[in-house]
Amino acid sequence: MAQRKKPAVARPPTAQRLPLPAGAQLRQLQRHLLSWFDRRKRALPWRKTRDPYRIWISEVMLQQTRVAAVLPFYERFLARFPTVRALARAPQEAVLEAWAGLGYYSRARNLQRAAKEIVRKHRGRFPQILEDALALPGVGRYTAAAVLSIAFDAPLAVLDGNVARVLARLGARRGDVRQPAMWRRLQSAAEALLAPAPHGTPGAWNQAMMELGATVCTPRAPACGECPVARFCRARAMGLQEQIPGKRPKRAPVDVRLAAAVLLDPLRRTLLVLPEDGAGNGLFSRMWQFPALEVGSGAEGALRRHLRESLALEAAECVALPAARHTVTFRRVTLLPFLVPVEELPEVRRPRAAAGDSTRIALADVERWPTSSATRKIARAALRGVQAAFRFPH
Ligand code: SF4
Image 1 (spheres, helix red, strand yellow):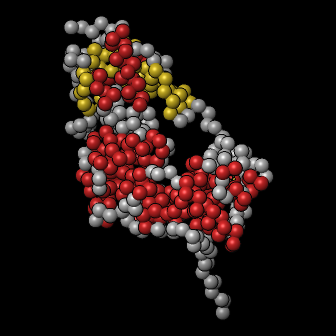
Image 2 (cartoon, rainbow, N blue to C red; image 1 turned 135 degrees about the vertical axis):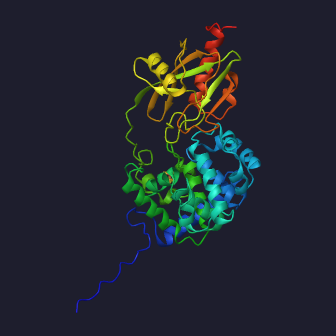
Image 3 (cartoon, helix red, strand yellow; image 1 turned 45 degrees about the horizontal axis):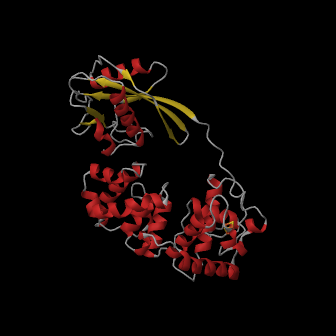
């Protein structure tokens, strides 16, 4: 009789693919790093708590944003939304307003969607099970591991850009750390380093690795002389710390021209609209924006057509204002604002337009509204244009 195949047994993660310390050496490395972290860690407000909600907020804010930029927002946001329930029941406008200035507004929207789910499915408590955390909107492997390890001591290793760089240097692994196969290898290595940690909690270990990458093992000019794990570092031994990790190939820049209509009524109020579902682009982050569209060479004609089709507005005048430059990742955007004086601001006419799809506010107040930086640039250009060149009819 044919023998049944034994089911494959999941092997524990090992650091074999990356030549990292193991056994007694690894325990030494852990001791050195944790004791350094204990002495040198920055006193950051989210390090004073084990409340998963507060840790979660900090982790989301810190994505693609520097610590110094997050600090003024963190306490203010928590004062306004002190609990998951408070965040879940707040109007979205209020959440976006508290987020204004941090950028990447999809993070704020996902935070609130996740808060609602936590209230609905988990009785207002951040889930402790990895799969449940991963099912929340906007919560990926990194955020889940960070929150669960710091708040609940779950043995989950975090891997972010800082940790990836530290690991690549410790193991002298060249190449682009964001390349998927490399990232998977680094994730295994991060887990292998975390798994046998008898000297500290997973949360402390994860934070120590991130802190090392953020403050000592920096992208440029790492301070190897001050590094608590320098003696275990292969990149340093080989003099390769400046070359590892390899540079990411840069995406070729793409030029984009965007025409925007700054409608202005006799009370100097303007119209902002919300993009329809799925129509948001990276420029306006699905935030309040001026009616706008991407254009080729005939910007004014295209904008007039857009106003006719989307707002049933025949613009009598369309005054070109000075262009503004804006860069979003690989896109070099030329913003072309046009001032369009109107007797009355139009209504938004969409098949499924809902109350709140458009708003009328003083042009001077756009800066204080939850808008993207591109919209604020257009508003500033328009204000300058109104003051300097445009004779507004009285
Ligand atoms: Fe980074 Fe230098 Fe420390 Fe190696 S020795 S981990 S390169 S700071």
